[in-house]
Image (tube, rainbow, N blue to C red; front, side, top):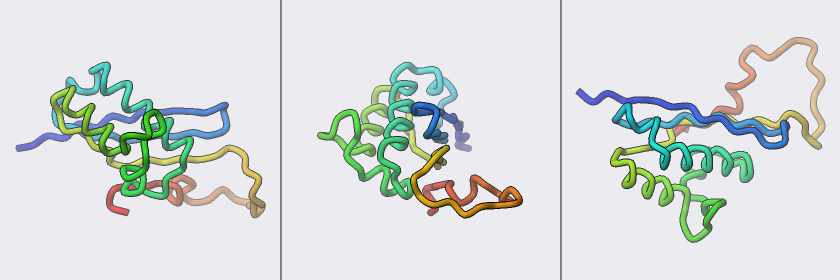
Length: 122
């Protein structure tokens, strides 16, 4: 039986852009590995900076901290170093303020994060 462990990394940029990324891996110890913690924070920062539309797009993008690698290749490097299969399961990114016109709402949306959630399933 394969047990999957999940870890959620957060990142905020200037208090305006927020990101939560859910990672999945097979060994519980991976969550405390320094290499994993660095790459998880870097990927969250990447999402804040480049706003990929979904996980597939994210993984194909040139990695913001080393454009000679894709995000997928950087994640694979980290997986080898921590000796575990690490993957991005899903993420959510939001912006506190935007130059785009916002439609005024009188009631809160039923599920505010649902429209912004990105997952490997699409």
